Image (cartoon, rainbow, N blue to C red):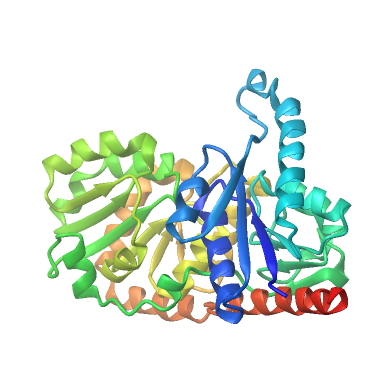
Length: 370
């Protein structure tokens, strides 16, 4: 019998790219498997998932808006509507399992699947679990986590430590620095910094770079700057003034960016760190200060404690970020140490481990049916 799996969630690259990595690993292990994604209408998964070659159904759901309570008025209606949409999707597709990767669109899908007795799997990438995942974890078949200490959020007997799935183009990157530099039209003789605030951009990083952008040219350093949509226009104006700056709102082919970079500036979300460990890049981390329980600072400190990264707090980024990066760019010995230590933390087979565990449960259930 052909196996069918729904993968639900999204909102940011930190949820979407691991989801696609898991889907690819499932396909690799069982080429005939049928995979359907479910995401939130209007969010980036509706674009990124079809680009990866998978079908996706959109549901009308939104997260709780903490900055404007008025915007939450329609939330209960959207949640009710999304449950009706999910019921139709699951009834029509009849999945053998549902996998949740985080993001608010995963909640109604997994909740309904659990009510129907369909096996559910959760991937929790962070060291601090999200509230919806904690609720869903009680009835999940298995909860895949990045590291230890997650018993405070989930039943211990359901936990499996797998690490975080990394996009195969990053995990199996064969592009050298020369090709990476050429891709961005930059100078191979210059030190190259990659600045990325994740798929949606990072205000603190963008403003810090903008404030002292002239220092890069002054020290003969070039910059690959992924801004996110809100800052793209302003950053593009800065790039016109300096030919050693490459700017875009989003980098589709991150494997070239990692290959080109001598040093990376990044937020410290779990998925960003997982990729940086695999890419083995010296990194200056600027944690997002409003992450739940300040888990991005916890993530960054984990690397700092192992001499595998440098941290600059978001509140100090305008004064310290650019000077910290320039100082590191001139210190080859420290770059080498950071590179070596971050590489020791790399996990390259999380997607395989997760896929095999899902297929083991699904196959057993299909055999029982058949």
